[in-house]
Image 1 (cartoon, rainbow, N blue to C red):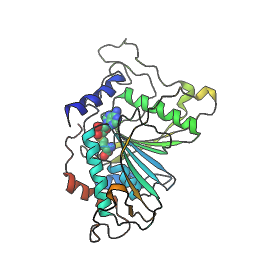
Image 2: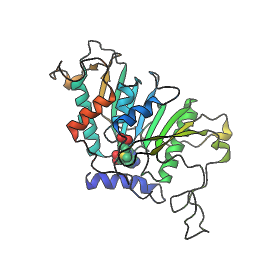
Image 3: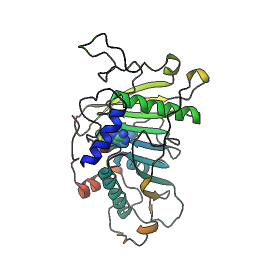
Amino acid sequence: MTEEDLAKIEKVGESQGGKGTGCGEAVYGELKVEATSKLLASLEPPLSKTDVFYDLGAGRAIVPAAAVMEFGVKKGVAVEMSHGRVEIACEAVDIFNGYLPRSLSKLVAGKLEVVEGSMLDASLEDATVIYMCATCFRTTLMRQVLYKILGVAQRRQQAIRVLSVSEGFPLGPIYESGAFYPDSNNKDQPPMFPGVPEAVKHRVHHSGITHVVASWSNHTPVHITTIYPASGEADMVKDVKSVGLKTNCTLNIDRNRNAIYQGATKDKEYNPNALAHQARVSSMELKLKIAEKLGAEPEEETK
Ligand SMILES: C[S@@+](CC[C@H](N)C(=O)[O-])C[C@H]1O[C@@H](n2cnc3c(N)ncnc32)[C@H](O)[C@@H]1O
């Protein structure tokens, strides 16, 4: 990670106030290969072709790639602020293209988009499921993402499911220490931010915790939350504006999950003996392939 990437990412965290969780937002970690598939397979109702799946802080874009290619969602969006990690994700998109059979159809049934920028600037207007590996995301950042999702759910009048690794959404007041409780050395400190208004709390439904194997711990909690639309004026939140972000690379696939080559990649040599001879490629195969090509170990580990 470059100094520039690190500074940009830390600036977004710091702009929200409060302290971090002990590791900075830029720190990297991933779920293990099998854990990604297991987690997505455990969703009830299951992921389907009507879903649009976002990963906020997507690193190498492995999770949204699995959502598209293994679970058939219509769109996976990887939002990542580190330019270096976006470049790796786009290299992976190119590898997917190289390993997926070439489509004879022009019809796009699913796509993976890699988008560079801050999760706070990303438009989540079409999101139905959001994933965040939030181990190092400070409480105040989680709160701002929560308000953003509450805004989208109320505008669209549709529930949005969220899977957040390590950290759930904070509903209580947030103190300077970054936690939900006052700094233990200063019991009288006033909260920096009040809790989510009582009328709004019912829209945030924590439906459970599951545990997964991640690169830093074999028993990492994943909070499963559903954010519901407002039922009237009283449980609405103020909009959090999104600037929208540029897409750096896209992989389009047809309904048999064959890659649809486009533009510059049209003349790319296709290797019929490559891994995905069959139409469907499991995310595990893909992830292993990517890991082999891009380096098996994440550059840093969380905690
Ligand atoms: C722990 S990694 C998770 C990688 C990936 N989601 C996964 O589970 O495989 C967290 C990622 O969030 C990114 N990140 C941190 N703050 C961000 C922000 N404000 N906007 C976008 N990405 C951010 C970091 O650069 C890092 O790559």
